[in-house]
Length: 158
Image 1 (cartoon, rainbow, N blue to C red):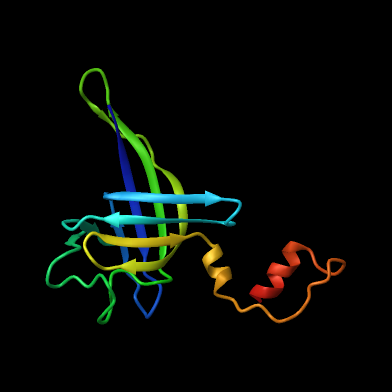
Image 2: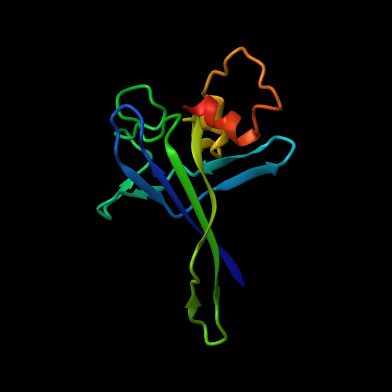
């Protein structure tokens, strides 16, 4: 029997927060990756009684009276703009009953775009297109003779 193994790494990067939170379980996730949307986006649901591992390897509860998931006070766990990486793989039992856990593969790298702090916690994510969507484009015409897609993006991001 195959079981999914997760490793979700959230790197806090807004408002002076610098923690790295690692989760090894998710309740469910939904993903949409399409050329039509020109982005990868999805939603992760974390269960109520979940622990995260900090950068020192210590485990802490995600829920409880001291947990600040939603950002209503200082230093919440998740905020819009935090980096997120999701690694995934399958572990299975061999014929003799031993568990085999192969290396995980990175299936998503991006940013948190929205947090719903109700239990279960829902985190919406988007790939690097999130950064591009934060940039205001100038009100101008990019002539095809002068610009390629690459030079246009470079112009917008500088």
